[in-house]
Image (tube, rainbow, N blue to C red; front, side, top):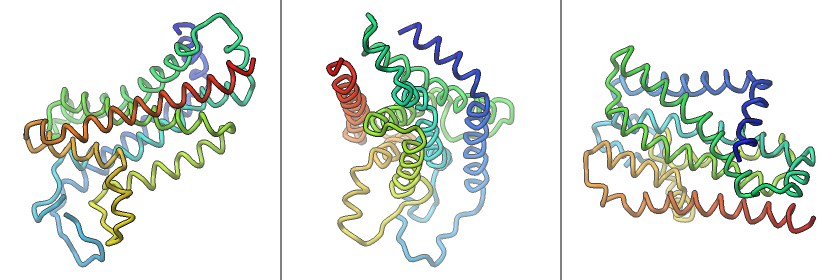
Length: 257
């Protein structure tokens, strides 16, 4: 596991562009959220209804994490090239035949990618709060906990996706499209209702929707019991996706050798 983690670090040194992109995308998401959160809210005449605003507008933390969610989900897909490349270049077959833990191999990728996304997010928020003195709506330690949920979901989603798709480019294209679509529908930028019961049912079961429910509960300083179901749902989805990806990949590469 440690050797895979260190190898990921060496490989990432050759992909400095991805690291720069990570910082830029997360920073841009936070900057956009702060800009729109500071503007007076106006409901306007739009076709969709917006229930999470209820006249007073969205809270600062909900706005910031709402904007960050889509980019974090996309970055998880992008960084999972470490796993996808191993499959595409047949490296995973040699790893599967080696006397190492296959679970440890997948865990190393997951932990590394989690850190690559999580740390820049926390650094940007810390810089905004400490250096710029911006009120983020929540203390940094609560942001740290909430970010761990969405970053964990991003890693689980991208690992799950890459367990089915072999090509790195195909995985990036499909994963990015799904990340954008589901994050928008879940309410990353505004509460989305289409007036279609089938679509609304799909929206309710999106894990990002559950994440926003948790964020809004924490921001409103309400008891976590009110969002316990949403919190457990996110955790179950994360565990389920990673577990399914591990079983699928092990069956494809370990049992076939």
